[in-house]
Length: 191
Image (cartoon, rainbow, N blue to C red; front, top):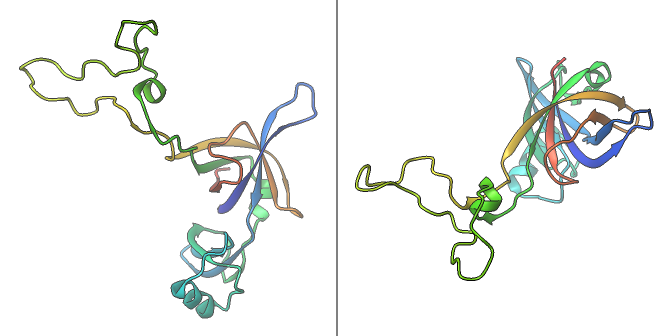
């Protein structure tokens, strides 16, 4: 079973010793149609609206706030509200989120290169250094670590479920989860 969640932030339990936990808000979602355990699910995220979204809302008789659509594995057998009972019995979940984007970064930040001396006169501070060999192979080898886009990639982590508050839709998992607070992601029940 999969669910769309929003990261609230981190906290800790009041037991001794305390456990660092991440709080996730399970988004209210409507199942539009089900086929072989896979379902088209609508949920609310922002105010995005266009004619294709309006057409889907009209087709499935959805309220105006359900403006995003995604395909998930669900326990529902027919259209209606997304069933969240599986989260109450879950022991382990896989959480998929986008990591924090760090933009175009250099090799020291992106790949932990040592860099050169920081003092005057070295003229080699944060540069990558040599990127190839000599006449052979006469080219840069594929996979060379260089400066470039860092972060904003999808990462999946496995977490133990601490508790699930069905009334408020708050899922508490042990440990940290990638992404900023307020980020949207998906949670898959493993066992």
